[in-house]
Image 1 (cartoon, rainbow, N blue to C red):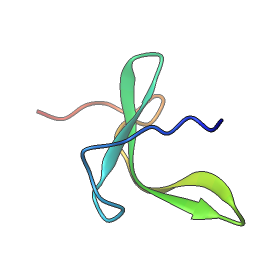
Image 2 (cartoon, one colour):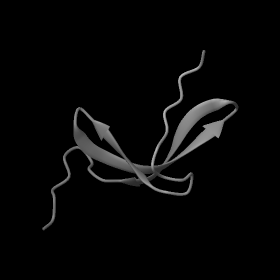
Image 3 (tube, rainbow, N blue to C red):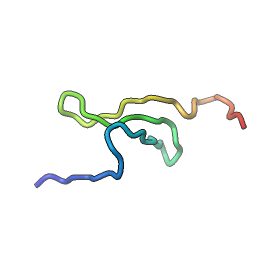
Image 4 (cartoon, helix red, strand yellow):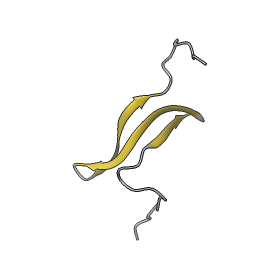
Length: 53
């Protein structure tokens, strides 16, 4: 039996990718060669970069 994770978004809706609970990227969910994937569209935080307010 397969598990299915249903999202309240469509395939063209941006998602936020977190690393250790910190938002790092925006991306689009999809499938590449039969595997689930995320296309990174924007980097939200670069290591060593200063945040601007």
